[in-house]
Image 1 (cartoon, helix red, strand yellow):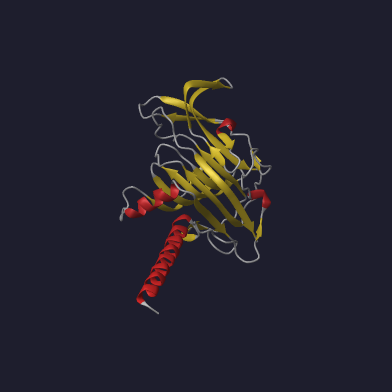
Image 2 (cartoon, helix red, strand yellow):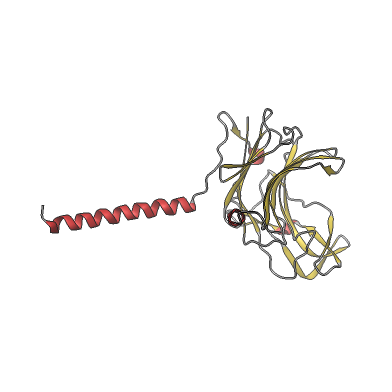
Length: 278
């Protein structure tokens, strides 16, 4: 074989190899690993929805809590905020929960408010042992909102709360609370804060918040709650095993402790949620 014949062959091979490497690299960047359920566990329809419609699914209560939050703004005076059904919008391929500043204050049920948020709550109130996983993102990092994917006890007497994705004050956390008489005693938490060391850990966490990422928690009768980001274990609770029936929530609102200035705020978006049970 002549040199002229070899060189084009080498060139073609190198191009194919480069293309393959680029393809793998691109796939690695874009793919988000999913946490697969243990063998024998089944998908549970009451806590599973791919939000690929324009109507909210039968699994959810589309009635926001009928209460207002007295919340202090940065400038000092108190103002009201409300969770509203209008702030939960099905787009056809995901659900959008809207954080809103109302330049023209809104009056409902005799109360006037300038801030509002979105709230989606499962009809299922008996979630205890299972794997709860959702793919979410916040449009951009903005510390004055409070988007969360969480489950919490269904009875008024107290019980377990699992904060699977909670973002506030530019802090990301996983948390397991055990509530009793309105108090949570030393929750088990994993935090990614702006002051943590090394700083790149916080940068990594903020990238997860503002891009489509998979957030999961798994509970069993024999083990403490475990929390995952994109299929990787990030936190194991040091509290008791989860024992109380729970409700699943997606919620967001302008933050109760430091109200943002008037403007446009990022939305909290949920692509899908999946629940598996033994």
